[in-house]
Amino acid sequence: MLENSFAQVYSKFKLHFYQEIFSKFQDREASLTAVETFCMEVILALKEPTVNEFASFVRISSPNAAYKVNSLIQKGYVEKLQSPNDRREYHLRPTKKYMDYYNISSAYLQSVMERVRRRFTQEEAEQLDRMLRIVDQELMPEVERK
Image (cartoon, rainbow, N blue to C red; front, side, top):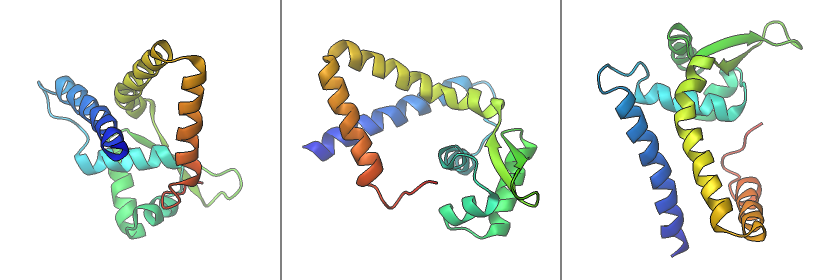
């Protein structure tokens, strides 16, 4: 029962995102491929990784990662920032162009969270928050971020 409920919520977030993406691009071709979209989601979640950190996380070679990153840079979705600590190292940061694209899903998340706050007591919402933080911080060690 718990598995089904969580899967239903997760699926609805994904489906809403896909609805919005397709509606925005019905008259023109999307500029991000599916793989590039996944790459961008990883870069965003890793919070400014280096190319090597990105490659290591997604388990691809550094040259393959560099190729994907360069494509995203050319399309204007990623920028490279030189590390202040090691001038030879560059970190990947999503651009405003990508964040505008990404905000399609984050705006919906905010809307759903407002509905949660209206539907549940403050104590229930805080309990949900505590439970989700535990799932994030303790129960998903396979997906460690820096």
